[in-house]
Amino acid sequence: MEKQSFPVSIKGILYENGNYLLRKNERNEYELLGGKLEFSDETFEQRLHEEFLEESGVEIQFEAIREPWLYMISEENIIIIPFICSSMKKYPKKLYDNDGGTVGWIKRDELDTIHMPYGYKDSIRDVIPRKSFSHRKGEYFKSIPHCTEQKYHINIVVKNLKGETLFDDYLYYFNSPREFLKKKLKNRYVEENLFFSTVDKKDDVLVINYVCVV
Image (cartoon, rainbow, N blue to C red):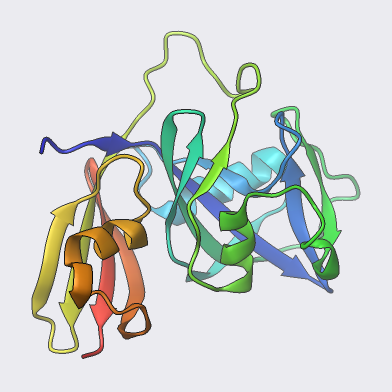
């Protein structure tokens, strides 16, 4: 099968004093702050840092990466890569989203009740993220006329504890990375033995790495 390509969105989990900083978007959903990865971005951190400043005025630093997942908005397949982050400076007196959304703090115990895709909630709770779905509503605030969206081939790699490659293939549409591995590995797939490791960026390819402990 020909390698398929995906837009990639880098998102940040910012937790302070029992609250998460979230954005309410044009689909009336809560989401993590962040934005689309571009070829010119040298690091994931660079993109997320710029997006947080633009969407909230908050300057952040990075703590850890969490497992990527597939977000389908209508027929568009988007890979979400979440990061744990913390603030570097005092928060501005007023949070303002230049993209037109609403940014604010949501209490941890409100996560169960707010309208938010499962994948984001799973990322926040640090559990295996589920594929999530939404319907497009109007135009994206950040859509730019005559601008071609930059997309990446997603390479899924599984290695054992010795560093030997057990699986190496490219993700195809409508599959989250875990779902893809389960289909490909079949009875060799054992969820509790497979752990997400990291993501590497190489030109127009993102490599999502897993480690199998047996």
